[in-house]
Length: 578
Ligand code: N01
Image (cartoon, rainbow, N blue to C red):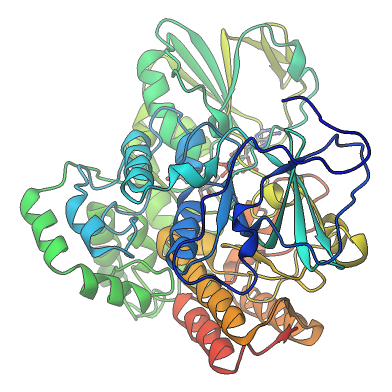
C-alpha cells in the first residue's frame, strides 16, 4: 500500500473496523475510523480532541486476546486484535515441537465462559497435544466469529500514550498507526524465545530449530544426527520423540531437571460425560486452590508424616501422574526438609529407571524440587537407556562454541546434522519489553522496569494510563492454570471498562502508593517460598543481565481473586480515575 500525501496525516483504509454493536460507549464513536498509515519517520501529528479509532487495541490472539475481544464486543466496545502470527493460538501456534502438549489436564485447561462451548468440545486425551489445542483455539475463533477483528501477520512495534488526547497510538511493523483509548496486552508469559549467545551460533551449517518457534511443516529427524541444548519442559517433552526418530541424539544438559510421569491416556467417554455434567462444581473447586487446578492438596506436612505413610502418598501421586505430585503434602515448597523428601523420592525413581548408574547420577537433580517449574513427561528417563542417545553434562563447563558441523564442549567436538535449541524464553517481561511501550512524558516501560517489573495487581503500571496487561508480572499467571487466570483478568478488565464508561471516566492509572504496596506483597510472598531461591526463569536468571526478581504473584489464586474483587468494591481502589 503506497504512502499517500505529504506532511499531513493521510487516511487510507486497508481495514475498516466493524460498526459498533450494542450500546454505544461514550468514547467509541471512532469505531468506524480507518487505520492511519504513515511513514515511520514522519512526526506524529494528531488533531486535538480526536476520537480514537478503537476503544481498545488488543495485542496478541492467543487464548487471552481472543477472549478479550469476545468480551469487549459483548459489552459494546470496538476492538482490534493485532497478532504477529498467521493464525490464532499464541503458545500453541508457535510451540509445535514434537511432543508439545499441555501439562494441565485438558478438561481443566479450557475456557469456562461459555457453557455451550464446554459441552460441545470433546477433548480426546488426558493432556491435550499441541495440534488438538490449536484446533480448539481455531474452533473458538470461528464459533465466536472473532477472525474478522484480528489483523494477522502484524507485529506491534511501538505504543505511545498521547497525553493530549488521552489515548494510545499503536504502531505496527507494517508502518500502520492505530489509535485506541486502551491498549490491552495479551502476549503470553512464555512467548519470547531465548536464543542463548553461544559463540559461533551462526556458523552451524545445518538447520537450527528453537522449540518455541518450530517450523509449521514439522521436522522429520529420521536418519539424522541431532544435538539438543537444554533439559527444561520443552526438551523433556520432545527428547523421547526425537530419540525415536533420530539416528543419534546428543543431549547437552546444564542443569538436571525433575520430571513426573504424565501417564497420558485417551479420555474415557464416561469420564468426559461426568465432567461435562459437573463442570460448574469443578470450576468452583478449582478457584479455591492456589494454582486454580482442581486437585486435592494433602494438608499434612511431609516431614511430620511417618516415612512409610509419606512414601505411600508419593507413590500414589506418582502412579496417578502429573503436577499434582507437588500437592502430596502442603509444605513441599515451604520447608527444605519436606522438600528433600519429595526430591529424594524422585531421585530414587531415576535410579530405578536409568540402567547405567553413572548416567543416572548425571541425570539426577540436586536442587529443590519444584523450584524450577516441575516438568511432566512421557518416557523421558527411559529414553536415556537407548543406545542412540548420549548425555553430555555441561554443568561445570559451558559449551565453548557452535561449529560448522556441531559444537565444541569440554574440549571435545560433537557433530550432528541438526541443532535443537530447547533453551526457553525471556519469561513474563520479554514479549512486553520487545514492544517499545511509552507512557506519560514518553517514558519507556523498558526504562521503568530496568530494576525488574513493577505493577499494580499484575495488570497495570504507574505512568502508563489505560494500559492493561493480561497475566502480567505480579499476577498469579504462570503459577496457575493459565486459562482460568486469563478469564479472570479479561473479565476484570472488561468490567472495569464498563464501569469507566458508566462514570464517564476517560483515564485510569494506578497510584504509586498502591503499586508499591502490591510490589511489596508480591515480594513478601515470594520470600516465604522456596520457589524464589533457585536460578529459574521465574526470577529471570536464564537471561544474562535480567534483574533478579521473582515475577509472578505466589500468594495463590483465591487470595488474588479476593484482592481484585476488593479493589472493585472499593471503587477501583488504588487507581486514579480521570
Ligand atoms: O525452557 P526452560 P522450556 N547453554 O527455561 C537450558 C512452559 N512449558 O522451553 O536450567 C546450555 O525451562 C537451560 O539450562 P538451565 C513451562 O512453564 C510448558 O523448556 O538454565 N543450556 C534449561 O535446561 C516451562 O517451565 C510446557 O541450566 C542452556 C533449558 O535450556 C517453560 O515453558 C511445555 C543455555 C531451558 O529450559 C519453559 O520451558 C514446555 C545455554 N546457554 C514449556 N541456555 C507444558 O507442558 C538455556 N539452557 C505445558
